[in-house]
Length: 302
Image 1 (spheres, rainbow, N blue to C red):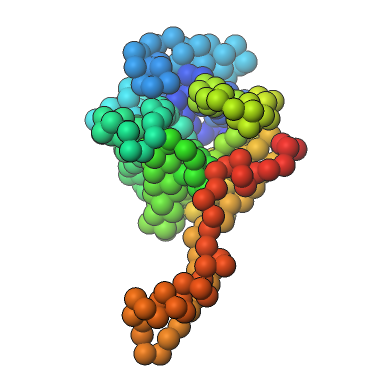
Image 2 (image 1 turned 90 degrees about the vertical axis):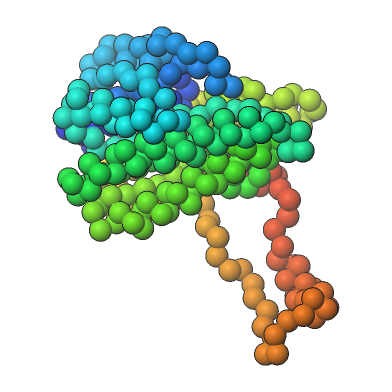
């Protein structure tokens, strides 16, 4: 019960990874605000049913939960999500930014509306909900943010310019939160989850390579990501902040962050010609290849 007495807000908690995290938070003793607007994978429609189902599951297991159907993608709605925690449980201690949608398209054909919609839910939504909670965390001088990123942003993927950009932006946002709020004992970390969910279920099966990738994903249930989220929300992780983790079945990985990997120096400075003749050949051996997640994680899930 490492979250006993704490209140957690989990966005996108009506299904998949969000539901698994909400259930695990409640099992660990937290009172949970289940936030979900019940839309389709592309963000269409809306229903209270998914959030209600998660709440029912938590209560059936002996936990405590409340449902909030406000959208993360609007500032005023995000404030009401946090206010729900305050109204129902009197405080907020953990915020898990998990809500998201997908609108995949090859970059040169991506509609502007699809870019704006995905960035608004993932990146703006993460900022809005985190910012709404920040003042309360500051006053109580404690709190933990857990943000869902993706290897589509950390490494790369086809047809997901909007999703990838938003997910990598979340990493930078998390680091900024960790730096700015460290003085108030507020922590911020990211998880890149591997799981078979409705998002990965949308992977097109156009070739044997994609089919083989999906077969490896299917055993990785959303619940595999929940223990790390619970740990990061607890006081056991009081010294963990500004980090990026990945969870792949039974593996937990600490991901690298951008640092210089090779430098070249020239006392007289550089010209385009000397860059082409000297700098480029010296650096090219360390250039990062155009890889996707499957190119990096080539071993079977452990």
